[in-house]
Image (cartoon, rainbow, N blue to C red; front, side, top):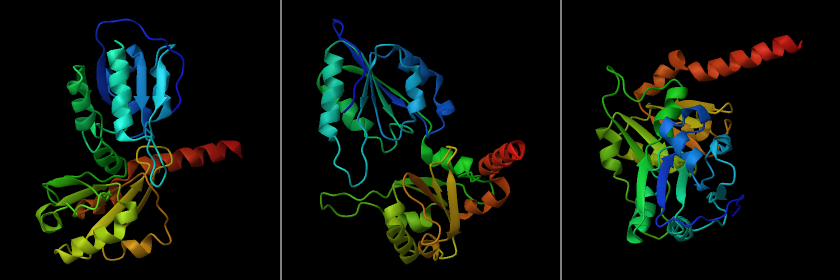
Amino acid sequence: MKTRGGKGVNRNKGEVYFVGAGPGDPKLLTLRGAELLQEADVIVYDRLVNVELLKHAKQGADLIYCGKQPEVKCISQDEINDILVFHGKRGLKVVRLKGGDSAVFGRVGEEAAACRQHGLSFEIVPGITSGIAAPAYAGIPLTHRELSSSFAVVTAHRRKDGRKDEIHWEGLATGVDTLVFYMGVKQIQIIQEKLILHGRSPSTPIAIIQWGTCDVQKTVTGELATIVEDLKTNTIASPAIIVVGEVVRLRDELAWFEAKLEDSALFQEAINV
């Protein structure tokens, strides 16, 4: 855990602000989020937060990294809760900065409950979640008048406590037009098998978007039946968003962001010749 600067001030009561940092592009931070970063005494931030956002911090603010990474021993959720409560009780203004939207698979419910249990007031500031932003930047709107009137966001991260799989595959497979999976790269074969088993067409288009909204964004598309094989030659790693549904077909026409990146790269190459 790294910190920078800052000494405590003696106020009677602090406050904790749960701020969604957005999906990666630092310009997608909300105005309220930027305002709070500029005022914060302490900023507790995650691995997927673009560090460019920390430039909003005022001089002397404590910057505390609490990132979690798959297969790596990291700070526990209880320890993060304790950090928020400790600094809040010091009377400080604390910003808990989370990638995307903290209320979408961001554990804000657990952290806010810890604050409430200790008598600390808090505010939840929504952010742009990657499950909507990454597909949009890949040219895939989640709804379309002719193709999709519903979508669902699903965490594919499997529990480690031995509890039964809680994903309702039978309902998702045929009951929702567009499916968006978070944290699903390592579970892609399970996603493929479960959806087909419960009635989703094997020819359903699928897209996997790595580092959505960032200048290293990469997208692999295919069909549900073949995507596991496709990924053997087109490597994708986390963080990535998986989109399943007919709207993926729109990418051929609407893939604006990667086209923009390519045009920029070609222009830069041309002026360097």
